[in-house]
Image (tube, rainbow, N blue to C red):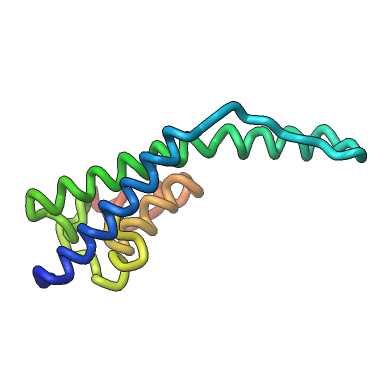
Length: 127
């Protein structure tokens, strides 16, 4: 990765950090409004659950962005934390705070979403 690319990612991450920090400061009380037609209880519960998850997602993203900025400072940015291979510039352009290359991310997603696949995976059997 060139110095110009690294600087571009650093600026994008700093911008995302400012955006995330200002969003976390402006959180207020959550209010789910209903109209004249009452929402059914299931829909209300779903909207409430989504609204309650927003701060968690914002907090997680802010931690990821800060970690990516730290990796830029230590020259570890763009290197997969799992396998040590370079993360493609295309992937970093899409998700600059990513810690994993696409192969390792897919493996991590499979473990989270389909844990039974991790048991049968070649990597699990090799270990």
